[in-house]
Amino acid sequence: MSKLRVLYLTWGYPTPMEPVSAPFCRNQVEGIVEAGVSVDVCVPVPYLPPIVPVLKKSWQKSRTLPAAAVVNNVSVRFPRYPHFPGSMQLGLMHRLIAQAVRRSTPIPPDVIHANFAYPFGLTALLLRQWWKTPVVTLLHGGDVNIYPTKGILERKRFVEIARGSDRLLAVSGALAKKTSEISGRTPKVALIGIRLDRFRSRDDKLELRRKLGLPLEHRLILYVGYLNASKGTHELLESLTSLRDQGVVGVIAGHGPLEANVKACTACIFLGSVNNDTVAELMSACDVFVLPSYSEGMPTVLVEAGASGIPIIATSVGGIPELLADDCGIMVEPGNPNALRCALERVLANPEAARERTQRLGQRVAQDYDCIKNGWKLRELYEEMLRFNRSG
Image (cartoon, rainbow, N blue to C red; front, side, top):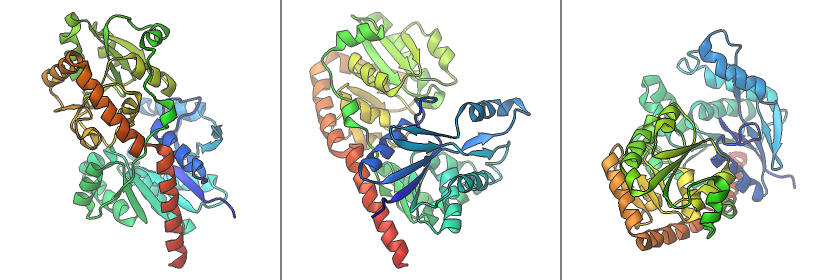
């Protein structure tokens, strides 16, 4: 019997060329592959020569990425599609992507797995018309919290995707509730999770600090992620600055428009973008992990922190309250640097209470956020979709 074949649509996937691109997709794909499913990862890449400066970045990316690659025995393809200003607003992007995916896929898959509502959810619905292949759409965060609020057409497209997908999933209960309010359809919650073997609590903190070039005596506050206003970067830097005289140093890994602000902050060390293996080491080397975002789906980085045994402080947004419920971490309101500073002082002043929280969170992560276990659940969903599709 041949393997079930899944076309996995996403905007990014970790490769040697872009090692920090959408690691949560790699987690999910590896779980699905472990469950015995053949996965063809498809990462459409925009292309247009740099006629205007705004297009220069996409042009450069399309030149540097290969047509295809193999990552940990998983096939990853990068079909090019024409891109120009306004194509998303005009509703043309998903059509252009669908044509590119169709041309680059010689044999139609058994199931299309689309990540994010637009453009890939709508791309998948268009591919379904050609291939008669069932579609599952997985909602992640901004595609629910932000995209439908941009205008009437965006909201209409979101509703079309939510109602038109054969199966609709969301990475947290909060996203499922929000989707129901917008579209009238409630997605099933499908936790992605992580490779638990990559993240674990370690005892060699000082040794890791030496290896990573971090201060040995200071109390280190770690942030890993995008650096912009909606991630709470301003509040984080303000909180770290206020704690500088207490021997507290921030360790910031990531990239984004506020990189210059981070580099200028004397209360933190800026590492730039780092790969997933280094993130695991940083979590074991530091004392507290913070995520002061204004909006989230279910942030994978918090699940990784939970598996690593580092105390967590995060804002009570999106799916974070589901992860940190039952006193598994400390939550603060977004946009409040004073609350963030007080939470940091609380954790640092009572390490025993922090340890108990991390133990509870570690148990939850091991039970619910193992991407291998969750990969088998997805396989069951795919097989159910196929049975239904064939009987219909």
